[in-house]
Image (cartoon, rainbow, N blue to C red; front, side, top):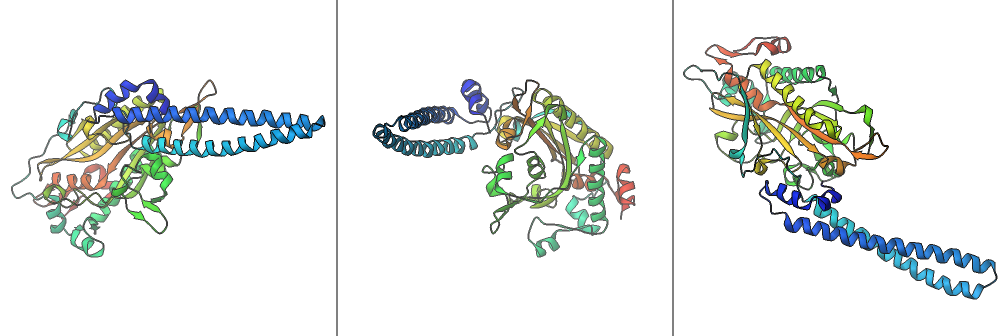
Length: 423
């Protein structure tokens, strides 16, 4: 959530920045400033009324002490009226503050200056590419056919048990999935991230804290009986560990990694681009997140990008990195880099990771601050990234590593799987 003070002081910059998202935010920003002006005026009236009431109360006490009870009783009637006015002003102030927050919740983060303008993913900028796209043998198959051929993932069984988008991993498919999770966690902890196991359901406050609510409410599974939400990513519970906290400046950064299943209702379109593992309602993901000092967050973002690059290099998968344009940028993000692996059998790029800097946007919602060298509280910067999302990584391995004799396991994963081939 953007800070009101930032909006007031940088009105034109905010409007121009949000224009990169193809949003004309002029009316919204003017409304925020007008609401805040009303809120300030109400606060001033409330403070003045309270001060007048307190002054009269002291005067009444002095009058009673001096035996002037009649004058004191007259003033008491006035203080009663002032107290009623205070209650009215407090109610109006709360209503105005709630209305202001509701408006602020609808405004996305301002993109970083280097975010390109654009409308769709076609306007994203490719900033890096590595790895050779393999030449497959004639008759090579997409991963959903390979999964069926080698009986390692059963999409129909998942459909029977739950519905479309909930696959069942079997045998060596399940072991490969587990191997990837452990490998990703090992790489992350070796890089200094502390592993945590977090809840798979969160409350409303957690959803608001990281920006999933109200923006993505329709994409989340809602457990109505308890008013809890199944997590769309480990980012939500892991970042909320720090909600309503004041960190010591010397203790920054905080770096966390965790594995969770993720649940999203967004799947539902049809065609080859969403077949198999390309888009699921439930999938596994290993996440990394950082709580950073504002002056160091963009260096940290570059470090996270390099970290994910190192993992993909070890997996020997062809990949590219995109800097997302304003029209494709997530609601909470100031700058996002997407990693995509090339699916040779499908002849297309598949997104496998997003690494983002949210600057103070989440921290403002979370009330996540640190005490700076001057002893003042300052908002932290939050960052997170997939390291990595498993379904499309697995799809890329199955398709790019397939041979006529079976599917070769990447060398770096063999110590984790205990086998070199799926055949």
